[in-house]
Length: 434
Ligand code: SF4
Ligand code: SF4
Image (cartoon, rainbow, N blue to C red; front, side, top):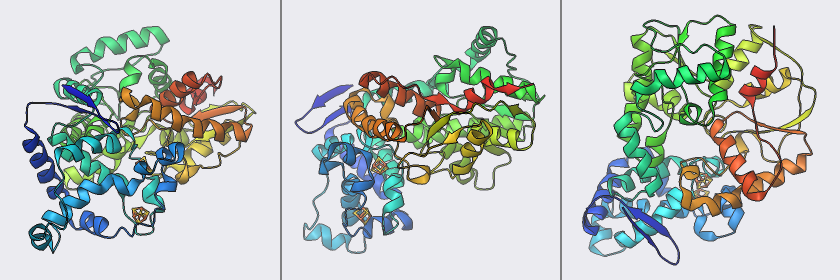
């Protein structure tokens, strides 16, 4: 790994490719990304700047370089030079300069350190340009060029080797036995047949085991036939974050294939936004048909258990505000489910100024929370959320994504803000009635 910093950007490199090879690898990947939709998106920007006011990195810094449309610049140049109807003319007349290694190195900060792929810019763009999706395509080119922040590249190597960033599958039974003993709850592993395949976020197998134990408590309470399985347990989007689409497909397929193998009808995703986009929305594309199993997020599961009266919860009776996780709500469409669960818990909900599909990202999505060098930027973004939470005057602050919670807690520690971010799942589990 090489690491370098210029006056404007920090970047890392992996592998031994020459600069020229890196540029060629990135350009070839960009060109491959240009299906009709991507081409239309790149063509149709009218430079209105509305996306800037939607992006938390621009809002938190006021720095014009974080304007979302600018994050697409090398992609746009690749399109105009290589794919557009006038590409031969553009090249012959030198109308658009080919991106060079310095452009790509500078771009690394813009598409990795300062983009959560949260889709807030996508929502406001009058031309319907899905900037978050294009950034994901651009990251694929950067991955091919070996130009990924080293922290993310390290996670990628681990996931490729182990099938998870948390642990090799063969260690899962021992880890679950330990969590089971610590929290006093049964966690079945590697059952040959089950109705529900339960998955975990990497953090739930390490520092945040209570969430997994709470899910187990609920599943056992309703008498579900469920299991975790070492062949498919890691619900993460590390591949999407890094630009390693092949890895993401492998991780997601492991979940679906394992569910099919054990006859499960449902794959239950953890209280984390990580895998939701990949497993819920992308997996069918990889399969080329409708998925043979139902994939649901923990929030949907809680909502269904409460609505169908399979579980009952005590009413807490306090005011609360709620952070909407981007991948679950804006990108995933699950706005109402969490609010029904909060209402069942007896919370009087006081909404954040920006909430629901327009909510601000926690600042950690898209791998930003794992990319240590972007911490100063992330802390500035956290300040926006802190101000909105304080403005509600609510007594409690809740979210339904473990990764958002980790990001918000890191931000609170840095800002010495004495508020706790609570988990919706843990609130339900802690207030279960007999
Ligand atoms: S909002 Fe859409 S059209 Fe306007 S500058 Fe941003 S990407 Fe371009
Ligand atoms: S996806 Fe989110 S973080 Fe990325 S440019 Fe758009 S608003 Fe900003």
